[in-house]
Image (cartoon, rainbow, N blue to C red; front, side, top):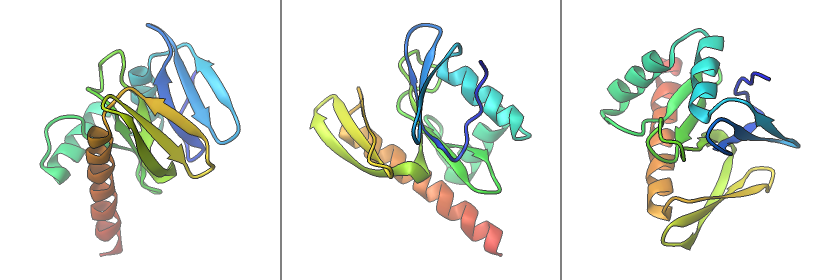
Amino acid sequence: MEYEISNGTLAIVPNDAETSLVYEDEERYFINQKPFKIMEESCKYFGSSYSGRKESSKSILGAEYKVPIIVEDSDNLIVFPTTSPQADDCAWISLKRVKKFEKIDSNNTKIVFDNNKEIIVPVSYRSIENQVSRASRLDLIMRNRKQK
């Protein structure tokens, strides 16, 4: 089964070496692709390449690594990586669906989504805070550009 990221997507989490667990509003799916492959295919589905979207984010933000990606630009569908994007443990989180996040311990953070579903990612609170901030900045810049 192939999967495209949509407004219903909460998170894409690695399950094992070749599969992902996708969280949506009311469902969870096992997809026979790595999270990074889902990202690449979703960018193509919406008319661009992952590398093109990555370069755009890097240029807009002046950042070099772990940049958020605008998967679909008419609705600013932005996702951010929890670690290095091609790492086997990297999850992708939909910015607009994040309600809050909480520190569990020094290496784990709970993310609560706008529908009150929760996941725990093996990443520090500070790292998630930085990623949400970076993705929010990208969202704001893009919204301001569209209004001009």
